[in-house]
Image 1 (cartoon, one colour):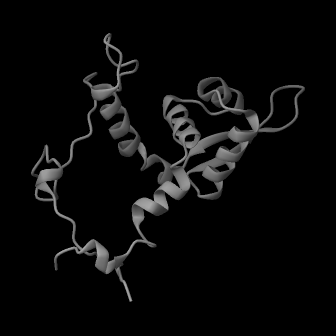
Image 2 (cartoon, rainbow, N blue to C red):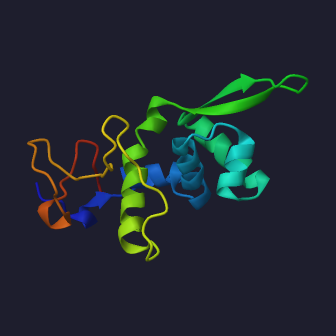
Length: 157
C-alpha cells in the first residue's frame, strides 16, 4: 500500500510521541550529559546551563517516562540526594542523539572541527550512525527510502 499522508491521522505518530518526551532543547542536552557520564544534578546544571527549575522539570519528565531512573546516594554529613541513571529505554536513544551530533558536526561545527568525538572503546575508531535496511544495505539516504502505512496507522475518517 502506498503511504498517502492525507489518508492517515498523525495523532499516533511515533515521531510526535517521541518529541512529546524528548523534543525540548534542554531535555536533549540533559540526555547528552548523561551519555557523557553525568549522574548528579549539579553535573547536569554545569553542563546544560539552564535554570535549576527547568532542569528539575526535565529530569522529572525523563524519570516519569522511564528513560532515567533515580538512585539515592548520601555524602557523609549531607542529606540524601539522587543520581540519575539511564534505563534500557534511555540507552536506546543513543543512536538518535549521535545522529543529531553527526549532522551538527557536518553542517554546524566551527572551522576547527567537532567539539567532541565519540569513539569505540575497543578499537578507538570514531563511531558513526549509518542508515541501513534489514537486508544489510548500508549508507542509505532519504532518496533510498519509502514510507508505508504500518500496522498501527489510523485512517482518517
